Structures are given as C-alpha cells and as structure tokens.
Image (cartoon, rainbow, N blue to C red; front, side, top):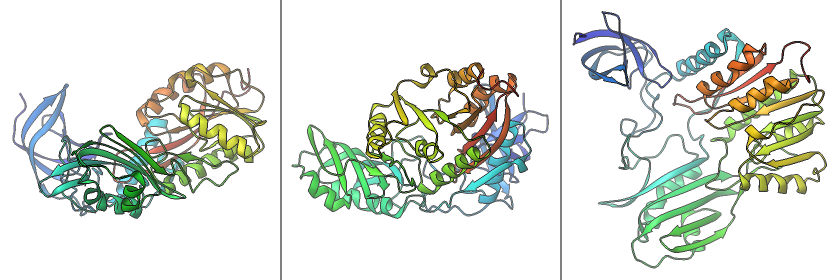
Length: 423
C-alpha cells in the first residue's frame, strides 16, 4: 500500500511527456501536465497498465522552467502539450533523448530548431455545429467537442485565415465534417467532407472563393464537386524535381522543418563517399530523390502509395531524368535488391518504422545508411540488429519540427563494419 498524500519534485519528463515523480518509499509516479522542477502535492494515485499515476494533485511550487502558454486555449486543446515548458529546455530534453537512444554524448547530436509560431502548413480542421453556429478548429483532449474559438498559434497565417472563416462560409450547408488543407507554393488547397443540413450546396468554385483557397474538393453527403488545383508544390524543394502534395496527402508539417531535414540529409551525404547508386525506401513523392541526382547518383525510389508514385514518376519524366531514376511501386520491406559498389540506402518511414529494411541492410551491406525517423522508439528497435552486427553511428541530428510536442525528427547515418560494404 502506498501512502498519500505526499509531496515530491518532478525530476524529469518521460518519453510521452508525463512528469516523473518518486514516492518517498521508492515507486515512480507519473503526473500529466507538469514540468521538471515543479513540486507536487499528490492526493490520490491510480494504476493503469501497471503504471502508477497521479490521479489528483496540485502544484505547490512552480518550477523556474515554467512559462506562460502561447495559446489562449492551451488548457482545453489536445495539442501542443509542452507549451508550459521553456522552449530551450524542451529542445535539450529531446536532444538528450536521442543521444541516450543512440549511446552518444549529447554534444554529438546536431540540433535544428523550427520557429514555433505559424510554422504548420497542413492541418485537419474539425467542423462541429454549436449554439452560435458551425465552428472550425481542434478538439478538446480525449473529446469530440471543439475548443473555444481562438487563433491557433502554430498554424501558418494562411491556414489560420481559413480556420477563422470556415464556420461562417460552410455553416449553412453542413453541421458536421472535416476540412483538410495544405499550403504550398501556389497557395492553399482543401479537401472538405461533411454531413449536409439539406440546403443546396453551391459550386466548389463559389465556396473556394469564399474560403480563399486555390483548389477545393468536396463531398457533402452525396454532393461531390471540385474546382481549381488538386495539388501544390513544396516551395523548399529546389530541384531538379518538383514535389507535389494534395490536401489529404502527406508532406512534412512545415516548410522550415523539411528544409532542416533536407539540410541534415545533405550533411549526411557529405560525410559519406560519393554514391554511384541509391536505394531510397519510403520515397514518397520525391522529397529527397532530387538531392541524390544533384550529386550524380542514379536512384531506385521505392514507395507503396500509388498517388505518391504517380507524382514522382510525373516529376522525373518532366525533368527528363527517367534514365537515372527507377520508381518502384511496392512495399519497402519486400523491395530491397542486392547492393552495388558505393551504394547507399536512405530510409524515411512513417511511425511504423522499417525493421525489415534494416534487417535487409544488415544482410546486403550497403556502403552507408541514412535513416530519417519520426518515431524514436521505432528507430531504436530498427537500429538494434544493425548495431549488434557491427554497424556504427557516424553522425546524428535532431530536428525539432513538432514544436511544443514530445515528437521529434532525426537523421542518423550509419556505416557498416569495416571491409564489409557490398558483400
């Protein structure tokens, strides 16, 4: 039996952002919504999946690392959970996490930071009818209810403008729905789905003009229409290929963050012998593909998403580079080929990671491997067999692309055991 109440200091945050507190008798307790250095009085404990959590507590002394949240609805919204914590401390915490995961000193981890305000260029807005009309925004934590109507601190101004006017424009025609949008070189495009009110829905061109977007695809009940651009280009990709995305598709959450990722991949390439050939797994629409072409390599780009493959093939053909790029529509884990001399691999998987591709790398021994990761736990899992087989981390970088959250991006370069490349 563990006694309550008790007081204790928050020593650190765990990987999911919960504060780590130690009971005077020894057990570790997790507390949500606190920062390191807070002193808590914990009144009640709960146990969830074998983990002790502070069910009821109060902060009796605030940490000097605390700061005022940037967002007016921080206490309601389910996003940006670290806004109470000093931003530089957050970044050093993430840097230390990556360093521990890779067994490196923190100073060995390069850091690229994204300015938090107005950085997100894609969003999914929830549409819900309220007493004052249709609202557009984000949901309360673990709820289907919209937070109060307030400007979002992280949305790009163009997307915040869309959020602010969406309710008034769409309210007559639907009472519930979803609006996905992305900002690219040409402007904002959007994808709208929803449940109709029964009023006649205007043409997509009319709604797009009222929303201020350059392209709109909509499905309201049985009514479907589209107008304008269906894709926009990512402005930070500087050739020889263009990289396009649609409103409901995937691209990096911010142009600044993706630019930093690309810079770190370029840095990784600088640390390797110039490749003659690259196998690129989870290639998407070619976010990194053109970087290899600029360095004189030929590329085998593997991607399972049919729409992304179509975009990449179109871009390669438009650039006249079909003789140097093979685009393969396949699951990455089943697509690795035996390596050629001076070949490198690049992996950019989603949160599921790439265990099979890493296992293939351990077996086929490319001259180097660059792993772009958005999930630290999967990165650790996937690199385990490689490191056990003698692969070494040459360099690593943290990109704080998901500011005010526990998420991070990383770029890790590994080299095979000496003398084994291409075996």
